[in-house]
Image 1: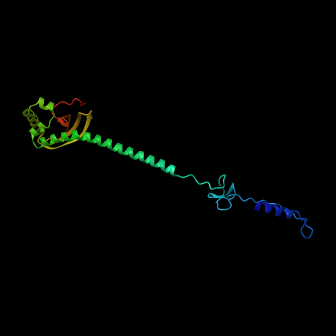
Image 2 (image 1 turned 90 degrees about the vertical axis):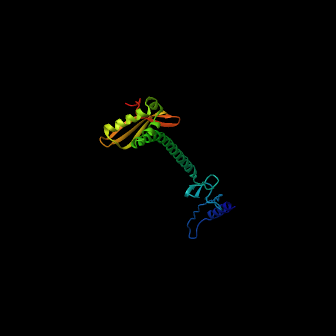
Length: 211
């Protein structure tokens, strides 16, 4: 209705011959269409108008405002990536913990026997040794070998275990040191075997993994 009224008004003005004073009147008819975006909507007209992004932004075929795509998808991918990284870090920490725990067990067993030798508790050191060593040496032979070691280098002042290399799940090479009063610190290595769930060093036996 508004479009029809404006068109009629433009035609009526165009039909007048001239202004007062003899000048011609040139009237340009303008038709104004009021689209669905005029009242109650943020868009101006059905095509281009005042949208959320500024003047001239597309408002969609129906004149409605076209919203910016949400960023929830990016945040979702970020959460997934962070979750995978966190799970990987936890898995790596668990595997490293298990590895160091397995390596610590033969080291602890070797250190236990060395403490007995430092305190001259030869029977306790013999009982904590591996079964192959106890089958090869009697308790007296084991004690005689240890006393011969202290006669050559002096009394044991201190002991320690440096590292352990695992060979499968039941054997390891333990590296340890003994500090003697006369000859100072000397480095050794020994075979450590797992028997009935317990690790036991073989101080006097040959280590097949040496060299």
